Length: 467
Image (cartoon, rainbow, N blue to C red; front, side):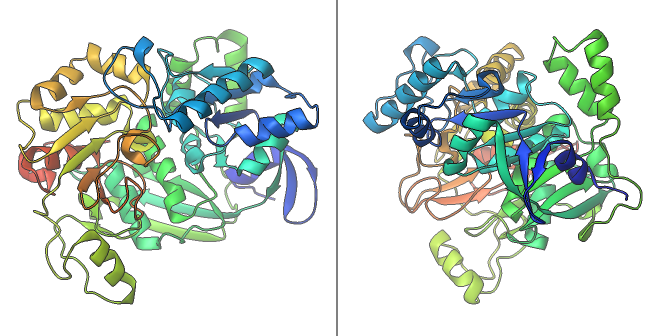
């Protein structure tokens, strides 16, 4: 029977079938952060178990770490509870022999940026992490998804997971992205059309000429955000772009090992005639610069549109956001701008934002910050002169971390503050109690910083499509 890419990945990692809906799934790599692993290690100690395969684990301190622009050696977590989490993670990793990107590590960053840039994510893998945005790794043809805290213990002890099978969904996008738009705009359009639960229960495979033309990093943004439509996983068929990225970041993969790997990767595609439970088709020509107006990622609209009429579904969101139905979203003043996160904290994202910022100044009414996704991204941005562009414009150039994506550190919104953000979620209180979040692309966020309001970036003279 013809198989989908998702079905092939599951089949190749199935240790045993439990019943019609569940398998015991093998994990090639398990990633941990500071807040989803402590209970698992405590349980292992209580049962006098060891970690079965320590070298197939990775730990990163990312969510709780302050991003103040100080030297790596002086990065200190002052909050007592957060500091305890970080110290416990180090103690656990030391005891069980697990690689850790700790607070003062030069390569510390966000787990979903650190892992690919160190060549740890490769086509055909199954990657698990106690974080929902593990779907990011589908950009490289790996099956990645988030797991619950209770499941981390089972993975550490057995390198397997009791896994409930997903359905198959295919989303095809064809055509060229219009000038002044980006993959972030595309995924916000898709989520807005199919809804925040539109892919619930499905592994989504993205395909089409638009997807094939995307860079590896842009594909990561696409797969990262798929979970905001409820997707259990997101996948893109590996191709030459994938191979180029992986080999550039995994220098040890050479010679016979690379030839064997590439032979395996060539089989990673959905067969002709493979059945998908649901299919959607989109035209890239319809993409405009998008921005969210509400408190769910599917409450998104073109920046040129009017806010929706108030009904039962939108009234609460409009009230929380302090917006009025039927008014333009453009020209809404913002107090803060945040460029970063596992969605848009990569070097390509910073390049796109810097292109808008270069030679301009942040509005006097705005506090704007750029938080690179990792130490490596930060160094590269400094080498390319991007950091100086941001600094000259009046942005804060911060150390890496999850930062203002979520209110688990000291980069938070004050009640009522409105933020133009390149992150993935705009839930109530996500960036701080009573804070108001508008999701958008790095270029759109940069435009908001310069103008002090939500602005169609195309009005600032953009001359390229932001892949």
